[in-house]
Length: 324
Image (cartoon, rainbow, N blue to C red; front, side, top):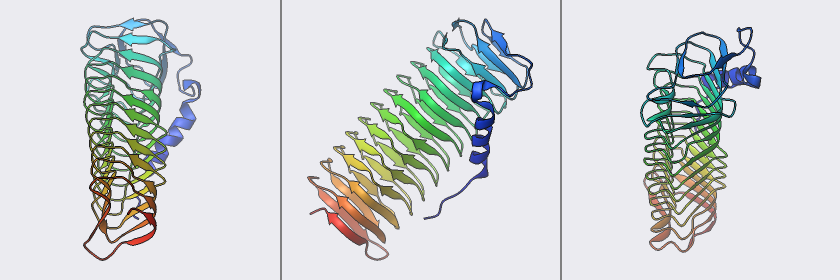
């Protein structure tokens, strides 16, 4: 399997380690209090909320690079328009947003021309469009909740982001959408969304140790080569449990049960299915193209077929397969 290693995601991780502790280590002499909505225009500054904020339209506008915003457990509430926190369509990388709630804006967080952001311990829910939208690459999201938004819980339109401990549930147009390569989703729950649970476009992304369930469409869709699902479960989704399009994809140590479509659909060659359970799905248990390999598969009680292997470039290798 070909795996793309990117220095940019390592750079973002190092940046997080240097700066996230107390949101400190910046050039400003002391943190700057925020007492009302407005523009944050001083670079290299740590800002913090002193109280809950309300807004008509945008609330906090990031207008400088290297800005940290600590909500201090407070809530920013809108009237259904604007954004709770936004870059106002200008590039201002290396923002940190942490420790609070955003409610009832058009977009909770809208970094429409920025990236290299860190978002941690943030709940951006019940907004009319997206909970979080980020346009550029190399972001770190940890302990983030995006529930009940009108469109997507989290949308990132670039590569090399790391998402962990995410809750993206009951959104109106999908849980998590990432439109480029080389991203990771770890230890997360994505459920009860209208549309797809997790959609990752481009190569070299991974979903690990996550639960994707009860979404109205496909549970996990990965649309290029060299992607993987590891130690995760997809269940009771309205389409396929997992759909991996493109060669060199793998599903390992995972379960895909009770989905309306196929449990695991891997329709391109050189796929790997290892340590997988795919039972009681609406059509097939596992569909795959050969060449490929299957080891330790249990696929039972699927009404169309438990295992479908379409030979294109040669046979698949099968070991310890229980798929009568």
